[in-house]
Image (cartoon, rainbow, N blue to C red; front, side, top):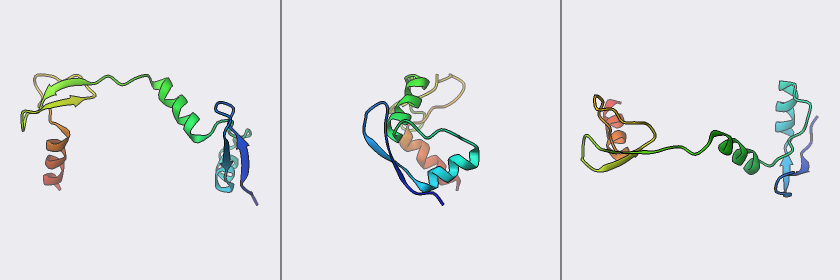
Length: 93
């Protein structure tokens, strides 16, 4: 029923494909307008709307290395670097 369409991104001017599957999805959701931006430009707009993520420095409670975390560390909770955190998650399985 639907066929792939080539559209032009209004931000970067590149061509992108509005696939038949995407068209069916849009119709299913009741969207009436075709997308005006390519995926890269849509993703960039979403990211810009969120703003930059702030990272905090902490010391890993397991190995003692410096760790960058996306939350404010608290004194009453241990913080782990990504390697130690992954090890702990694996051990819990």
